[in-house]
Amino acid sequence: MQPACPPKGGVIEAERTALQGTPTMDPRTRIEAALAEHDPPWRLQWLDATELRARSRGRITNAHGLNHRTLKPERGGLLCCRIFGPVEELSCVCTKYQGPNHRGITCEKCGVEVLEVSVRCERFGHIELPVGVPHPWDDTRSFEALLVLPAGFREQSPGDLRVDLRGLNGLYQRVYQRAEALARCIEHLAPSLIVEHETTLLHQAIARLFGRPRQRPGTGPTLTAHLQRALLELDASRPPPSTLVATLAALGLTLEAAGSPAEP
Ligand SMILES: [Zn+2]
Image: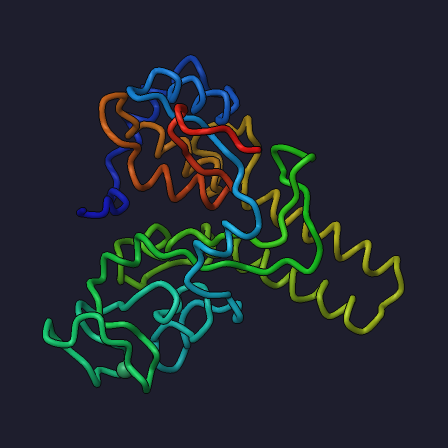
């Protein structure tokens, strides 16, 4: 299947038109209404921590995107090639393996699998959270880990590394830094007031990344804004678009056929 990569623009006008009249509608309500009309119908389910980690190709262990000296993605960072896939078509990062004959090989030197650049639109990473954090849309759910949207959706196009840290990458970077700071406080048995303060900062960073459920379109590069854009591609007669599926997963949600057995 050809993965759908992010459009390079031109959706703004369509977005404005599609969202006219419903600019403040809760995205979960919107998507559930749209899914109910789908044939066959789909429903939203929360991902639990095990399912969520199972979807990740690796844990983020570095707050940075690119190495300033080499201009290559940092190992373990938000654009890491070991996690998200190569930035050169059918080539590992150190270029030891290149070309279709090496497809599927994982380089023993740089650890990158030789694949098409388009896998950067399919592979998730994740950020481990040191404490359970309530879901900004639903306090009864809490996260232990957060899926990181495939790098291809955070780049100009997959493998194009001219990303800026003011957008989603910056929001992920802040979440990672807050999670690490809190983990250090807990590890070093910091006073409870400091732990509480760091916990609040982590909640705020995640809330900022997700965006407000009633966020107006075009008011920031949050996951909610990304979801609103992805909803425009939803067509009742076709399978849900990969952008929508990926954004929902980053929000801790998955789509299931409504006819499948309910959770016990
Ligand atoms: Zn290599």
